[in-house]
Image (tube, rainbow, N blue to C red):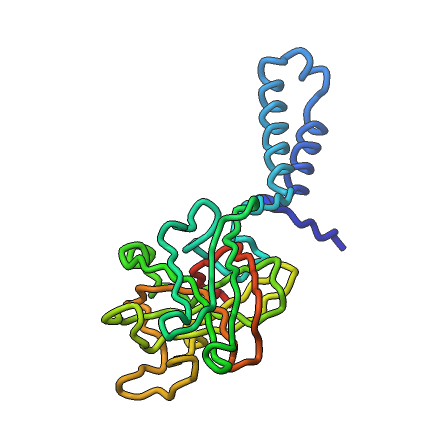
Length: 262
């Protein structure tokens, strides 16, 4: 039985090898030596064909593309930075605390040596009878419009150096008449611990709240945030009606708009 020969080329290697050996046997060796101008080109040509066939028989793996950032194979997200190192828009963050209701809670933001945004302050619960909140918000509609947030699956917030308290990232889609007016906002709560954490939040995980309490969806309150109309993003720490109080601090590494690929 003839051996099975596998090759990546168009012609079996055994056919080329056998043809070459057969030609050598059929020719008079001395005649070949005396007439090199005829036989040498034939030998060179057959040798070249054999070399091509051998190369074709090799299996070469295509190089793996080197992907960056959120496109790395281990990361199921593709992303664009909304806020992060060198892109915090620090001058646009403003405090919106319970002072609008007579409270004395405070909040601040500053940029750390690691280029994180540090959100810190103090929650007072005595003045308002157990209630209290402190927040920092940034309103930049043209910037959010440029990012086309509606084309993503949601947001990812990465934190570090948290104190174990509960925080939230909030989105507003309507303009209040003034800063003290309460309006519906869409909230996602998370607990920030000391180690670095990333919270990936789909748009439908931002739930509607009004004055710190969840509200049911209605004709006036859409169930999901309108991603075409996001104009304010805020970070909030609140008492949860006297469930937490006192100093708070968390470092925000980045906030990204993400597309979830799996």
